[in-house]
Image (spheres, one colour):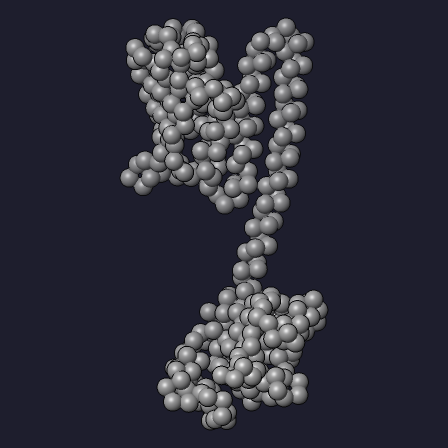
Amino acid sequence: MSKGSGQAYHAGPSFDASPERFREAHPDDQFSGASGVLFEQAMAQTRMAICLTDPNQDDQPIVFANRAFRELTGYSEEEIIGNNCRFLQGPESDPAAIAKIRTAIEEEDVTVVELINYRKNGEKFWNALHIGPIYDNDGKLLYLFGSQWDVSDVRAARAEELYAKEMARELSHRMKNMFAVISGIVNITGRMRGVESEAREINNRVQALGRAYETTLDEASSGNIQIGEAIRAILEPYDLGTGRLILKGNGAKVPFNVVSGVGVTLHELAANAERHGAWSRETGRVEVDWRMAGEKRDELVVSWLERGGPPVSPPREDLGSGNAIIDRLVRHSDGTIQRDWNTDGLHVTITFPAS
């Protein structure tokens, strides 16, 4: 990988002699026999940057640094050995993080700290530093172990995710205001022109859209959203815990722009069920299911099934305003709709492209 893109590793010889040199320089520290060979192999082959410091010497110098550590920092073994780890610090290294490291060392504790460090060429990177003590069989502190991991990309991703969430919250606030303003305009216009019932119908559609969008804004930055959250937000106000609504969909994810078509369509079906369909009777139930379909699973299929209501039949063309709205929305979305006017209730299957 290149520097600044995760751990900074480069192609090089497969053999790292630094573990063997360390063992030879510290023959009394029980790194002998099979344990010594295991240490050499682990330190030479791991892609994790590792160093050991000697807490029994003044200023706790580094006494071992594997190849991954040298590649991460850009320093040679000669430039590292004998120096305290603070040579990696610089102007933007957080004093609080440094103090946490110092406390862990003094208390012989294990800790993980993220701080800005600097390579030899001056390039800074976020270092996830894991430190801890190493004891001999008698409990004497021999070394302090340190592993380093370049988490610059991880930090950048966190910052980007936080920014996206903050933007989503701000957008949610603004959209709520926008829907409130639209509702106000519709209400005022309805009263002034004497069409208050029509204004209420329009407002109901506006509010359904608002509920659908509000539940999905946090996910919108990722490109795809859980459509089930929007469907629940749209339909649950019609149920109010009565058990007349049964939701059976799975965790299908669709592009954000699918929300408006699904939202208004389901609102129209729900309003029709209240006036003429299953919800016009106490015994009526509506079952809603949704799933991804198609060869590439790039179609959202929504099923609306009514039971327990009055006998249904296709409406006359001049009375089907809600159905006309649904048909226009589905066509505008390049989708398809099928209605089955069964004797026990309406069954509607709608397909929305979700690529």
